[in-house]
Length: 114
Length: 114
Image (cartoon, rainbow over all chains, first blue to last red; front, side, top):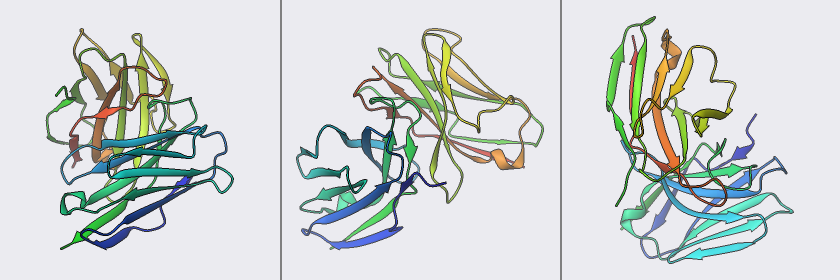
């Protein structure tokens, strides 16, 4: 039962180009979405979030887009840098925000090539 | 920068033994969480804790698991009688408030049950 799906286990992007990571969800009760980044041997690090009342949130090089009708969100990183190489997790919550019972996707391993 | 710290970083235990995983959340945070990630699988929610009691728990969090905040700084996860399938990375997280605030994760404890 995968309520949050990241269908690309890995993604390779050239440095300087745009990285687009995708996430789909099935639970219509989800109202808050987060992206976490994880390096090996470290815990997930919060990147950016979006509430269901918005369709876009931007923070520096990172932008998250939410399409509620399609139950789809995406993370755009532009321009991509070598330090962006990591596993990116999409997570969703149905409790109005925060971390109560976050449901995570399986992650997408982003590789930035020089 | 404040951070969530977890000890030990790696714990090896024999099947049937009890283990206690320790976490020091960020000092002014009010909400505390445990998540786990079995190797190759997604990050899974275990339990959330607020005001000295469990506020939400998943199906994974059965009677062999318990959490405690024994003093003002530590937050512990106890597994009473470990099983081989409990082998995983266990992440502690804390958040200042539930609504619209992301959780900060610790670096994780790798539990290996042999």
